[in-house]
Image (cartoon, rainbow, N blue to C red; front, side, top):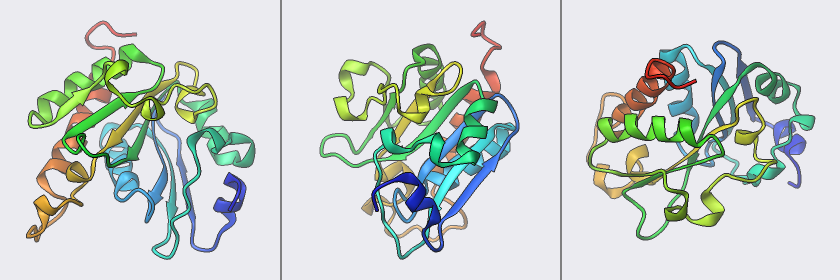
Length: 204
């Protein structure tokens, strides 16, 4: 489709912007593209009082635009979100051989990434939560200055989630619910814990 504005104008695409606390969750590859990322961002934002920005593609659409092309100049809602928040938590989905049990925490606010990483390790002990940038594939580090995770006042953390923790791997083939799979619930609890305790441990 070419650019962010065209994706936003496509039939069935929903853009969500809710301004609350100075920490904000983003999931601009939501809906049918990176499955459950918008749901995770929504649940974590609602439970922690954080702000939320999401783009939700309909079931008939899977248009991937690189993060560096998600431009606030194309979206007044995204621009308002980035102007309002100080720190961003961007939720993405990925799948790479050898990393199906790993969560990757990139982005330029490394102090916050470490804080979030500690919370996620507590809630998801079976996963390898990677905060060392050298251990994260270069294209998944979220360090580009035009990446929206780095456009807020104090930048943020980009979290790449494998299928297993989003409930879309063969591990969950017989899961009948109700609700999200236990690993996804634990992930959301970890994100809420990280946002709720930021600052209480001396972080600024």
